Image (cartoon, rainbow, N blue to C red; front, side):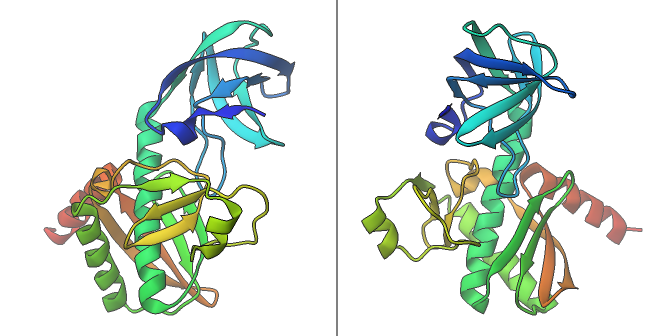
Length: 242
C-alpha cells in the first residue's frame, strides 16, 4: 500500500520517496513508491503530472491500494527519488473540485436532488443533477455558493470511525465499503470524496455557472472556479460588449 501524502497535505508539491518497483509498459514505465504526493485519476478529478527525479510523470493511477506512476524513463528499484508535482495544475483541480462540492451541496439541499455525475474537463467542469432547474434556480445557487466562498469557511476532511460515519448525513453516488473519506464544507456540503481540495472556501475565489442544459432526466451544469472562472467572466464580458 502506497502512503498517500496528498491526504495529509494537498498543498504538498515536493517530496522524497523510495522506488519499490519499475515495470516497462507500452507507454513508458510504471513506477511505484513507498509514498507519494501524486494524486491518481479518480472521482472525476484528473491525475497529477510532474516529475520523479529526471523522469516525467505522465499519468497516475491507483490499483489495489498501490499508486502507479507512468514515467517517461525507468527508475532504479531501491533508489531514493525526489518527486515534484505540477502545482499549478494541482491547485486548479483543487479549486474546481472544492467549488463543485460547494455548488452541489447547496443545490442538492435546496432542490432535494442528487449529483449523479461530475467531471473536471480541460476548460470546464460538468455536473449532472437528477432534477429540472430553471435559469433563475441556477442564478440563485451561483449567488449562494459565492457568498459561502467569500465567507472563507475551513475545510474538514478525514476518515471517521464506522460509528461516526453511520451517524453522518453525507452525499455519495454509490455504496461504499471499508474506510470512507469524508470531505465537509460546514453549512454547505458533506460528501464521500477521495479528491484534493483547498484549505478554506476563500481559496476557491469564485464560481461561475456557465450553462444549464437538459440532460437525461435532469440537467447538466457547466461550471468554472478560481482562475478558470475569471477567464470565463472576461469572455462573457467581451461578448456582451460586442
